[in-house]
Amino acid sequence: MDQTPKTLTIIHHNTQGLPSHIVDLKAHHELRLADVLCLTETHLSGSSVSSVFQLEGYDMFARSRQVSYNTCVDMAKKDGGGVAVYCRSDVQAEPRRYMQDVTDLEFVSVIIEAPVKVLLWMSVPTVKMQTKLLVQPPPSQRTMTTDREGRPPEDRS
Image 1: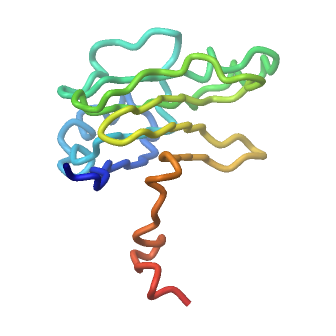
Image 2: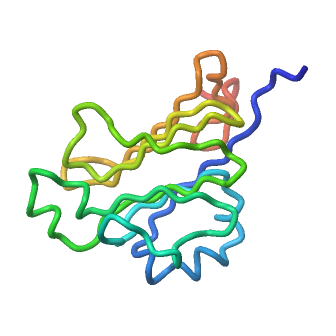
Image 3: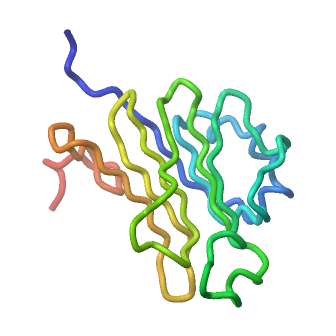
C-alpha cells in the first residue's frame, strides 16, 4: 500500500469582487486546477450565497464582511471584504463553524480529511493584519518540498 501523501493544490486569489469576476473565475483554466481555491475580497453580502457563485465540481464555503463582525459595527458596515473557499467535490471538506475566541474577523475555516488531513484557516486583512492562509497537515506528513521561490530544501542558502 502506498503511504505517500497525495498532492493537494491550494490556490489563493484576491477577486476584488466576485460578483463582477465570477465569469472570469469560471473560465480561468489555471484557477480551476485547484483542489482548494481560496478567495479574498469577494464583496458578497448577507449570510447566504446565490447559486450564481457556485463553481461546477466544487463545494463553496463563504463568509461576508457583514456577518463577520459582532462588536465592530463600523467594520460590518463597510463595503467589500468577504472570503470564500471552494473545495473540489472529491475533496472531503467540512466547514468548522466555530473557532474559540475568534470574533470580529473575516475568516473561513474548513477541515479537509482527504486526500490528506488539513485544517485550512483563511482570513482577509484588516488595517492592522496581514492575510493568513494556514495549512497544517498532520505531523507525519509535514514536509517542505519547495520554498516560495520553488527551490528544494537542499538548494536553500
